Length: 423
Image (cartoon, rainbow, N blue to C red; front, side, top):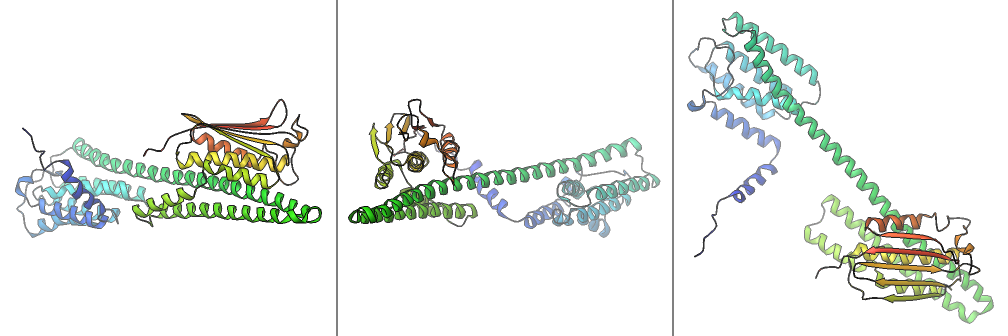
């Protein structure tokens, strides 16, 4: 025997609530004012409302209707002009109480106007509170002269109620301001992080390929005089390196464009997904590390490459970080230990990828050439590239160590946790 789920429930309320939130503040306040105005004339709600004077009741008339509407309809502007709304509603409430008309549900408008002034009034908040307090004192004095049986304790209790409503609105205003400030600070932090990421990407792409092109160009100039038949190979290597640099720069610019479109909401969800998939296909991956090795070899750097374990698909950030580790290590090898043997080892484990790049020193013993600074850039230990790599790997809960080896040369070792892509 099967039971059908009831068709009613909280899910049915989500669509109306979503439509209500999409409407503007003016529409919402207008509906609120209209509903309160209609409920003010409902006999069953006549005992619900604010009552202060307890004066002898007068029969209702046109003036009472006008005063009742004046306590509800001005709520249309409770967020646009909260001080003016409070002034009109409070004046109508005071007149209604002083004339002794029967209590209506419309007097609740005074509470709503007070809350709105506390929550939405931006300028002259102190003046608004002082004016409201002075008006209340004047109303209490008038009611007392008209024969109200209430004493100072009753008027003080009602005043505290009004003050509490104002403070509730003020606390909501403070929380909203804090949330706006929190979002602003979060946006600034995200912007700074994005700028740092872009700087790292540009450094990795430009430094590596430009270094390779400089080395290849120098070699081609030497070969023109010593071995002209081989100079063409060097120029071809420069051209290939330039094309790879352009390809990676196009990928990076595409990522930046997609990031900007996502931030401004310019693309639909499907378009964003398609764009991200396209960028992911063009992103440098660890599987393309052999291109880096071949490029370094064409630049005259003797590089040995070995790979152990089964290579599995990984998220783009993991693949890109591993690729950048190999790229930065080979760049430093070409800059600070040109012509020295370099060994690149990649081990694919079950839970991590381990990358080791070892470059021998100039004399093969102390690695002094690897650590020596060049005229226009920092050494490999204190450079922007390795610092950016450490930050990138750390964001993936990995670790990167770089430094001279006791037996000579320089070593870069990175361990990056893996998160296989689910089919």
